[in-house]
Length: 137
Image (tube, rainbow, N blue to C red; front, top):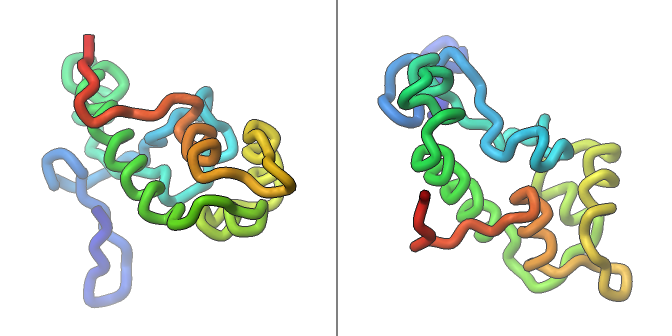
C-alpha cells in the first residue's frame, strides 16, 4: 500500500501486515509474464518477512501468492472494461512500454486485428486464470 507523506515522499507499507515495506514483489513472476516486469499494477510492496520468509513469505506460501494474484486479476478485470482491445489500448491499460507491449501481444491470439478480453486476461496472468473458489493443494 502506498502512502505519501506531507513532503510528498512515497512510503510503502506491507500489503499483508501494514508494517514498513522494504521490498517490491512481482505478483505475476517474470517467468510467468516478462512483459509485466515494469508494470506498476503488477507490483506489490511487502516487508521482508512476508516476501522472503521460508514459512510465510509469498514465494513459499501458495495461499498468499494466490491471494495477491487474485487481487491483481480482479484489478485487471475491472480495467479491461470491454470485449476487444487494440494493442495501444492494452499498452495504456497496463502502462507498459512498446517493447513490453509487443512481447505481451505476441502471446495473445488476435481476432481481426484486435485482442479479446479473455485472451488478454489469460496472457496478463501468465497463462492461468485464478478462480475465486479454486482449492490450493
